[in-house]
Length: 111
Length: 112
Image (cartoon, rainbow over all chains, first blue to last red; front, side, top):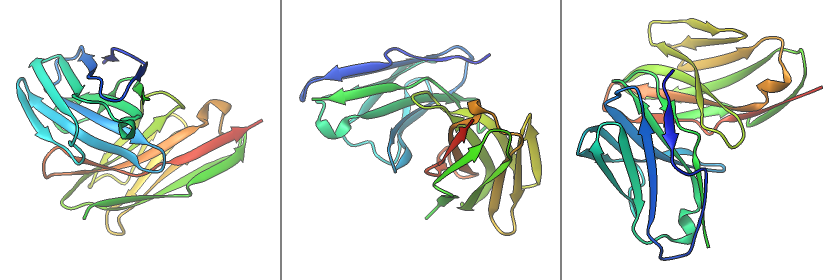
């Protein structure tokens, strides 16, 4: 079974802190994605990566950056966390345009 | 602009009953239609993926249908169980790029 593992299920950070969210997949998928999910808004794409060191902006990239140094690992970085970045963050991976496999999510609260 | 709209927003049914969730999509160029189940506080899990040439696909008690002419899809749940209580998300995939278009989900509660 494909496994997508997110490093932290729950995080609490203060405004202005730098935040790292890590995601690792074990199925050699070339595509990896970061979404945020907010009540009433559904899932929105922040960034995705289709290969090592490659990245593309999604719908809401402002305030975020990403890093993909190895194929299995995709990191989401909040350079200076703000309260409006309080959300559920979901990582996903896929092979081509096939089925998307999600991690369990990281719920971030910024105080 | 690509859009995926789901109805109803929420639904409550009795255990053992059937239900149908609806999805209307405007995705161009259209490639596939997906349904995901998301338990509270967990990541979404894929139920079905249908390409434009498929009319129906089943996964256990879940059956998805697709009408590419009317741009509508439905998810039918048979003999509901308490564990079916979750949010069900409809997703439209395009042939253009990797972006997917997510609906806001239907929240289903199955009561004893």
